Length: 506
Image (cartoon, rainbow, N blue to C red; front, side, top):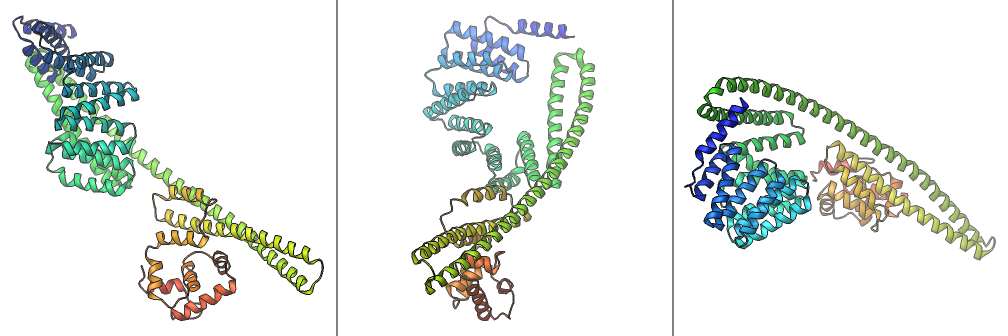
């Protein structure tokens, strides 16, 4: 059967060969063979077109034939032959920026598939330069789109975003707009910019019913399925994946039916065998789809379990670290109390002139310095305690950025230059936007200390810890809390935070 097919191709080639045909006729015939997926006939006819263009000395057509032939080799994964033929086309069309743009893009694509990323970038950049020289908006748009797709593939999303947007600006085909929106949605998805991704996701949903190209619809359903999975919306993911699979099957059937019709026209003797192969292929495809669906479901379950375990482990790590800071803070507080007792003892001796005054003064200064150092450490620890509690709250609310934020803040603790209170207020404002200003506006009679104690009431700090943060005594903090309750009309030992919440503060 295979020998018969080869003989039929050779017969068709011999039949189609006509010495009186022009290079343009050979070129058009080769393109027709290529469109009908008759690759061997297409290659042979392109070679005839090359010979005819050399005889006719048609340089412009020669470069075009070389380019088409190179792109055909590229589609057949004959990369070295593709690059060689495209380089010949570049030499032939050296004075035509439009042709050079497409040729360099083809070479760049070949090097990309061969994993020569640096060479690929170089040729795609050349394609952009030649496209801009041509002044043709369509050529410029394609060049920007190609290099944008390259940067997206290698993970350089910012540059990819710039070029895709430039390509969209020069695009003259309205029907291509959904494809750009899909590319932009994917870019923002990879960049974890959820707001921008959601914006283009909404555009794709609105455009979906008006899109005629099934390949774009399939790609959109694939993206929407991934997007739903990232949000743990398995029902929506299943809906889009099912639509994706059905449309993909439909397109495969259409292609298969077209191929069968072509074969029936040209090779009637293979009709029965092709019908049998088509049925068998359909069964195998259904089995493959069911297997893939089962594997995907298992993968979703595994990812879900993994994320749950990872979250539990992170929560446990945060609680252990919080406990460690609590213990360390307890020891630091004990040391501060010891230093305060020591300072009181030394002051008593100095007042009563018991011992060497210079020695007593030096000892007291040294003790104060040690206590100040410990207080600074304690303040940083209290700030970190607040951040741990805040991180756990974010984790409980399934905040996706908690991990990155946690590491970033932890790395800045030791080099913190602002005061503990200022640092805590900065994070407090992010957690409760507008609350601090609302308190100051609604209760103008609060003193500065009372205002600060009011803010710290929202933190997990005790009166002693709040005193350390503010650099005040515990007695001062307790008096401030008593005064706050009076000004806010709260009964003795009433909850300040609860009062503020019932006052409809944000």
